[in-house]
Amino acid sequence: MHFQQALVYAMNRQHVSLSELAARTGANPRWLTEITTNAEWRPKLDTILRLCHALRFNVLDYLTYAEADSCGQAPSSKLQAPSSKLQAPSCRR
Image 1 (cartoon, rainbow, N blue to C red):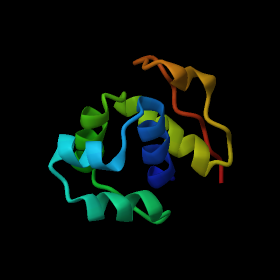
Image 2 (cartoon, rainbow, N blue to C red; image 1 turned 180 degrees about the vertical axis):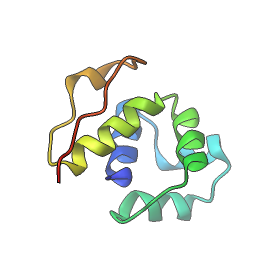
Image 3 (cartoon, helix red, strand yellow; image 1 turned 90 degrees about the vertical axis):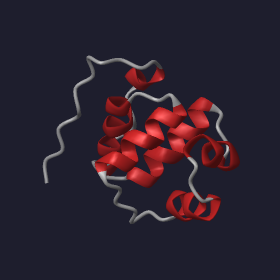
């Protein structure tokens, strides 16, 4: 899964800068710069929840985007608005 790309997408979608996200989460801005530029970033669930809460971005949409991108699929247009009824795309390897 591509968590880093999903985070950058969520930040752009919500028009939140690194400095604003740092202020909202209390995180070190250098750490945020590191994770938004590291394609190998593998966050813990609590980190995903904290970042999505700070971004006011639906967690299921975030995970769907991360998985869709890892399957080589374009993110679904369903990600335009938060929805609790999204199904994760199936990725067969």
